[in-house]
Length: 408
Image 1 (cartoon, rainbow, N blue to C red):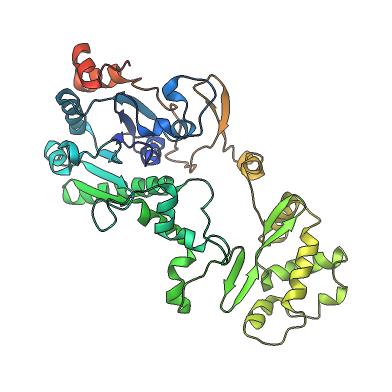
Image 2: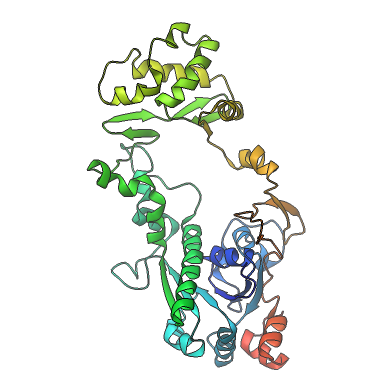
């Protein structure tokens, strides 16, 4: 799909996913790191064993389909090599680790003179300018400043973090999409494009209905734990089941299917089936109209029923009978998830410590332009000679000067 294009990836753990996505779509991606390795190589968790610079699991996960080179951009030789690569590239991603290209005198104004069609994407915490540009930033603080944490947790305590660190993954995926949009604009105008990607802004886009709540109902959603806010009502949507938790919305369409299950198990009497207009139950409840069974009675029936069954049993029955019952899965559950297995999603990857592991697969399976994994994360400086000699015709001595003497 993107096989004609070349990508320079100077991200350092903040945005590695962007280059990987373009690489999965066929682009030739060159990972450019400082001589000591990018900051991403220091991201935990780490493998037991393996070479010193190859132990980071996040680095391994988000740097497949990339050739790896090192350049010492503090030296003239390193900067000249980068300029040579920019001349031949279509995209360049950076994340300011260890320094922004602009601070090195290699900003967009310089790059577009070298390559008038380059797409330069800069990924940062809060954007490159503006009131927050120089604020300290971590996954936790960006998630808070972006908004999602305002909806996480219960109202009588502080907000809680949003599961595993994911801010830079959202920023990376937004950067990949933004790069392709900017490239389309370049094709139309013939002019190089600069894209400023803010991780904070990327997190705002993850808030789903929270973004539009005020425009629709005149007020923002409030932190409510596992309660669903419908108008003035708060309804639980997470219920204990036999081996964990299941998510379901106690609405009319759900109850139409589930009430017969309650009867079947003796949770409620058979009279429940016909004594209520279940399809419109939630509408009448929220409007304060008469209902045959109170919300408390319905929630009690749901609680008693699901407590007897596993997450997978409830999921499978829901799929068969047309009702959405969503298990709260951990990673162990996902590795055994039937849909992912039947779609042959998982990949076997050779980790740097010599052990094969099952790893997440491609984000999409396309029939006419299939994505693929052609290589795994490169070792530090692995392709110095191959890339710098083949693309730029550099001699061994010139490569040694430009790379800071890193082997490869």
